[in-house]
Length: 216
Image (cartoon, rainbow, N blue to C red; front, side, top):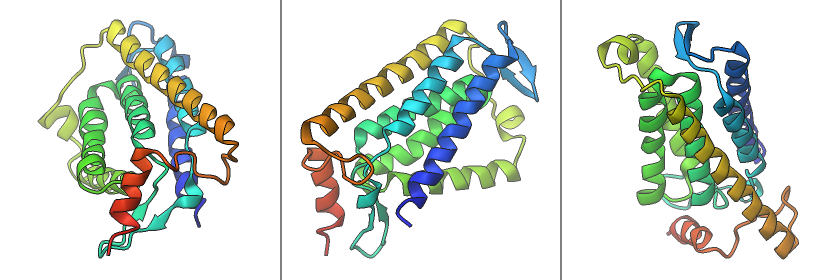
């Protein structure tokens, strides 16, 4: 059962990576409407696709998932610390910017803030649960009001190639740094990334434990 949350997460990220590579294969170098969505193919698709694969590699510590001891009984993942969350957020926003560009304000920025803010300020360690809840609510809303993002309250992007490049470059650099740091800890502490929690002993890890495992 502990493999189920990371398994679903991996499939979700992998699907998005494949979509980024697909948009590159369209060859829409000057931008085009494809399947009713505006996209612009470019090196940013490859950069962010690679960033997503690195983000998958950095998923760790699932053997430490547990249920919080407070009344809410949340699913807590202590090893999913802020560094991974920020790297994921940058990658996911870049994915929405690249692949559903004119929906990226809602599907990217707003949705990511909706799960990241609670993780930092309300319930530490429960990011994946926050992500599942907010994403499900958005999908239910947008399927009920399908014209919301396109007609009722559209927020189009600039369609500027430089913006695409910068967003995906930031995503790639941060995910490279995350994987490099994680491998450094694995080697230094002689850990097994398939069984051990990588960030035990860090301040972020301790804060999650104090809030959830030690709660009465």
